Image (cartoon, rainbow, N blue to C red):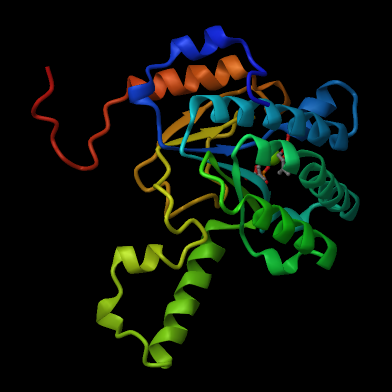
Length: 252
Ligand code: IPE
Ligand code: IPE
Ligand code: MG
């Protein structure tokens, strides 16, 4: 993983202008496959290869956090065969990649409603998370059976339980307290949100965390999303003016 890229790429980015947290909606796998007369599943397999290249760059750029959308709470609506394939791919990916991620100091975390996965996958998720829990490198979050609304509802439920148990008063709930109930607690908010595949929507991804994210959309389907294009997005991010609601009066 380390070093598996063209080192000229890194010289294009100004390290001081990098986002702390990048999130990616990895979309367009199915279309990539259909255009080539392949099954949608071939698109998902190709997407996994792209993911490895992107994680490699994240490791080498020393990004603080990378969150990728692998399976949404809405993706269960797809045909059985596709859902089964995705589960199989997911499990294979964890097994195949976890040692190399660990050697690269990656700290993996799975976000979403994990209890709906099979016992086998839950065990793999648990083992991979345990293996990497003390690593200090890139926080690599895989959103699996994840929905932004679902995450917010779960946070609200957890706070409601704390209130009914007398552990906290309603007036004590602040944005910070709320954030601590989210799957991404202790992680920075999303700075840059990338969506491949040509659609301009958020599809229930990281709704809370993206409140002030910069968006970057590309028509490229995820299997063809390259390390170069990832760098393009990071360079573009570096040139954006972020205001967070304020006036940037010190602007030259
Ligand atoms: C994204 O690619 C991967 C998942 C949702 C699992 P798609 O499967 O949505 O591909 P398109 O959007 O149909 O091309
Ligand atoms: C978003 O893509 C979910 C993932 C990439 C896992 P979708 O393909 O499910 O989103 P929609 O249906 O086009 O909004
Ligand atoms: Mg899609």
